[in-house]
Length: 188
Image 1 (cartoon, rainbow, N blue to C red):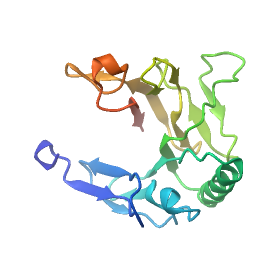
Image 2 (cartoon, rainbow, N blue to C red):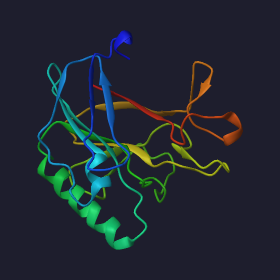
Image 3 (tube, helix red, strand yellow):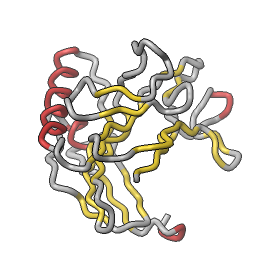
Image 4 (cartoon, rainbow, N blue to C red):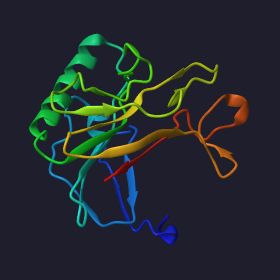
């Protein structure tokens, strides 16, 4: 990746064996000051806050763990909502697998954006594409999103499951490298 120009890289910390967030950028950045959710090891390792040296928008890469118990899920989301609330006056976005489909119950399936149910002051644009996560049996869901404050202009949000003759996500017979498509968007 460095040979392709992505010189600045970071990986979220992990207290044990958990998924992590990896970031690679062509622009210099530093790990930011937002405290990760502390609910458990998965919450800690699936959160990475970045501040770019030459760009005024902060970014949090995240993956909401798929907790089985409702109490665990509610505790994690309450903690994340507090973190988001503490940053809602910043130019910031949170992007990644939120394990939630905010457009599932929209009155119009192609609604352009919705307010975040998690924290007042955030918006969620509706990505182009039918799914971001696809079970190998073909059932797909739109669970990867970008949540941003209104003072951040996020455009061209889309899911990409194919690039350079390679399936990034899709049915098992296509031999994809992941079960999630890429969430691509522009920040102005």
